[in-house]
Image (cartoon, rainbow, N blue to C red):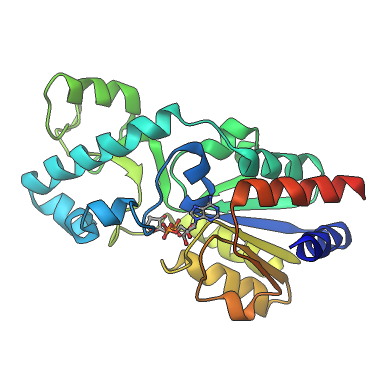
Length: 254
Ligand code: APR
């Protein structure tokens, strides 16, 4: 492990354009369960019940969606950045971080101190709510207050359309600008670091491949094996927090 940490720190010193790609595994040490680990969200819920087609086609599905989303939102709202988030914020201050491509909807990169222009949220955010008809935007807490008062599936004050957290559900179109930006940044970086993702959900999971095929060093830090481990230059199967803490320490020792 020590050798790998040294190697990674060495590559961070000799490369100029870093892209960090993050998934739910980055935030488990902040108390937010991931999706596919034992005890994860999809261990407790059937993801098919929450796809976009269901949401737009039935009131019952919207009610079920808001129950799940409300259960997920509370730990997210309380969560604080962990060592790994803080290490990524430090990477930005070191001046070579091109961007963070995150699948996470918890907003913890911002809480950790990364600047808005560096973070690409390709699966949207849970921190605000939008109307699916007129795109009117609502503060998440304001809508959660309506849920507490008994509203089962909130609707828009202006057009009556269904409201949904501004996250990207299965079957929902990806945010075009963010996805294009993430593709082009992945193809232009010289070091691509994956932290805490199972790399099974596309198109997001194709970005490490694009980076590798464009000549970048590919590093994967994930507790469990991923489908891309074989093509990575370095793989660490470990906890994101302590691993990133050690990498930054080594990097700063120079
Ligand atoms: N440190 C390192 N890795 C961790 C940690 C940790 N503390 N905790 C969990 N992991 C790893 C798990 O081993 C798992 O492989 O993080 C990975 C998380 O994988 P998923 O739960 O599949 O999350 P993610 O890859 O972000 O999912 C992608 O799927 O459900 C959709 O839209 C959702 O954005 C999400 C997408």
